[in-house]
Structures are given as structure tokens and as C-alpha cells.
Amino acid sequence: MRHLKKKIRELLLQAEYDQNIRQTLKMPGRQVINPLFSFFYSQNELLKWRAVTTMGMVVDNLAKQNLESARVVMRRLMWNLNDESGGIGWGSAEAMGEIMAQNETIAKEFHNILLSYIVKDQNYLEHEMLQRGVLWGVGRLSHARPGLVKSTAAHLNPFMSSVDAHKRGFAAWAAGPLKANINKELLKRLLDDHSPIELYIDGRIKEFKINRLAEAALN
Image (cartoon, rainbow, N blue to C red; front, side, top):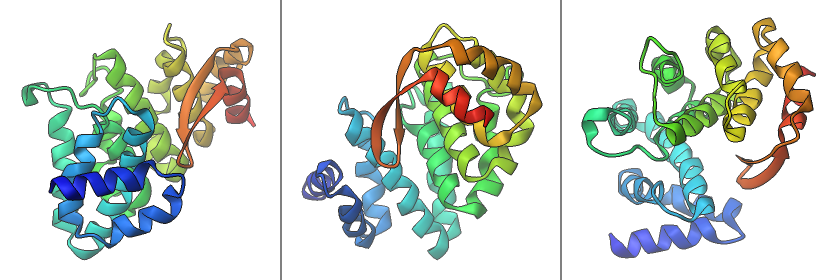
């Protein structure tokens, strides 16, 4: 297992990641899952994010072969975000969003759970940094399957007024595909927000200005 973990780590960090991911997908899915979970806690941001992307692809493959195995992974991610788990679920909300962006069946079953983490009277996550992860996960799902997220558009608004620039930016990015009138006023306010943030997209960590994300969301 140590050898497997080291091998996967190397594949995720190399410049040829887009090609390397195919090698990872050829490995037995159940064996790859645990190393990927461990990388969610890495201080290397690129490793963490590429583990999230790879988890999405691996679980999509699992779901096509054995849907219950994919459900088990989703339940594990949910448990990691539960206070009773005794830990902090770094990367778990992001992985949930990525998996559901990849697999429609899992998305239809679990999207309401992910969305509930930004709704005050549901499973709202109070942890500031986990909120960033949930917003990214919601945004990833929003860009892949906006119809599943649109009912929660109003709950993005409080995050667009956050003192945390990443929350403002992630919420604006998540709102874009929804084209919901309820988001437009706050998105227009963000057109004057030139704060830079880092956003993981297309396998890369990129820098964006919030006003550009708001502008894209309004167009």
C-alpha cells in the first residue's frame, strides 16, 4: 500500500497529469480510494486538488461497475463532514461535488446533501475553511448540472457578502450557471471587487479577480 500511495502521488504531481490519470484509472478502484483520501489532508495544494479530481473519476468508474461501492464512498465523505467523526473533513465537500459532476446517478441521489451544507436550517457547516470547500463543491456541481443546484441559488447570497474573498469568489462562480435573478444584485456589487483569489479549475490552480468571476456569472 505504501508503494501504491507513493506511485499515485508521483502521478498526480507530474506535469503530465492529464495523461497520468489514465494510469491511475487502470488500478483497482477500491485500492486507490484510501491513498486519495489521505491526499485531501496534504499541505501541497496541487496534490490535494488533483486527488479530488481523480477521486471523481475513480468513483464514477466504480458507480458504473457497482453502484453501491460508489455510495459507500459518498457516505464516507459525508461522515467526514459530520461533527461526530471527530476530525475535520478537508477535501470531502470538494470531492462530493467532483464525483457528482462526473456521475449523474450519484448526483441525483446525493446533491441535496451537499447543498444542505450551505443552508442555515439544514446541515450548515460553521467551520470557515470547510465553507470554502463546500462552495467549491457546489460550484463544480453547478457548472456540470445547474438544474440540480438552482433551487439553492438564494443560499449563495450570504457568501457573496462574506469578509472572506474566497467565499465571495467561489459563490459568484457557483452562481454563474444558475442565471437566477435572486443572485443578480449581489453579483453586480461584486463587479467593483478586485480582490484576487485562487480557484482550482481544469486541473490547475489559477488566479482570478472576483470582479471577473462576477462579470462572467452575469453574462
